[in-house]
Length: 212
Image 1: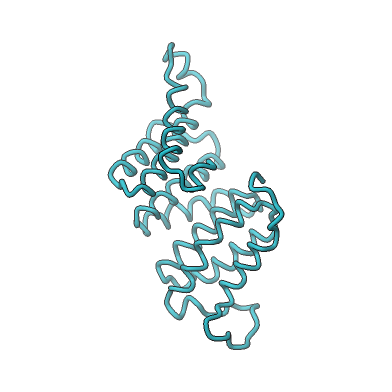
Image 2: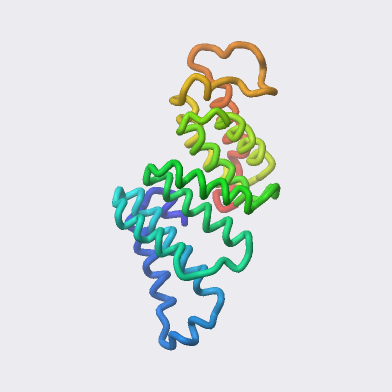
């Protein structure tokens, strides 16, 4: 995952493809009997779709995303929530906001109220989608996402807040309002309290390891 997060898209794509090659069976029947294989293959397809979308290859990305959602059954609600998150992430990169919102909402519901890293990541993604679309509840979702992240020590999850700041800055005026609980004073010119909250959250654990 680290090469993809650091923008090394070609390297990431090759690694994901190599990962899938390891599952090419000498004995296909035996491999197909292993319940761990289909979810892993689906995850690798989704990761390739994400890399391809970032490489601006939308047709290939859509093909890989379709492959990621085809031919397997999630073994539990958490695996399904994870798959929905990956679908939402790729759909957002492809500019399909409605599709991205649907999958992100499914992921948030799938994780429930757990303050785990995947649940917080899903909340961040859902908030980002709504803010970019200028939806009225985008700000509330952003507040919920920030609150979830502050309960975690994961620097990688905190980094996922970063796309929210420019989205809030560039969104409609209604999206940049101070939500309940924030100071009622008028912000200074060029200062957005929601963006400040993200900055504060990001700087809260600079000493945390990226591997957390």
